[in-house]
Image (cartoon, rainbow, N blue to C red; front, side, top):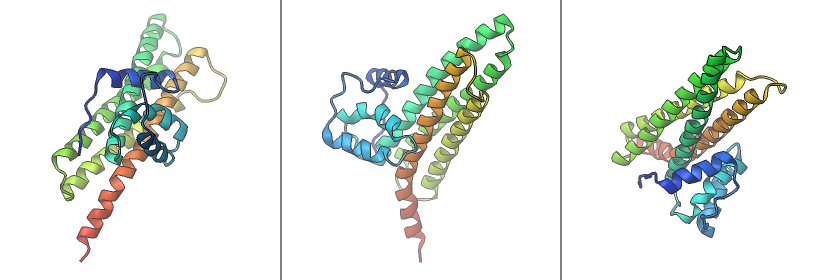
Length: 211
């Protein structure tokens, strides 16, 4: 399995995704890879967001669920990092002001911190699958760990969104909610794409264990 190496163009692409740009200008999608990404994104809960965030990689060799899962998880991590940076800045300002909203924002910050840690661990664990390509109990254990960490990251992002109920809120709260909601959505998509990757190995493992 090919490992994903992060580069400056990759980070720039993630920032385009975060800001909501449709596609980075430097991306020249190859039709086959673009069609592959589009088909995979249809299986996610937020297909349009999925395609917008991943289509810039269509100029690379992406022809496997494993490669797509790696990229999706990395995009989710960078988006979580971007959001954490923003929420941290707001929390510091509110603390100085001794504002009533500080505790709510700080609670959200802790949850985003947890999401960042969990997504980081999930990416490390996915890379460990490269070191043990044999489909055995150890391989399936790594897959289970990725599921656990990405699911936990999704739960934490969702919990932060829940800190800001309703539609009538300050601009500051609405901005935080919008950014964290995007983290939740891309993480949901990443989990779906990882499931697509892991499903075939689970099927192969069940077939191997049959008498």
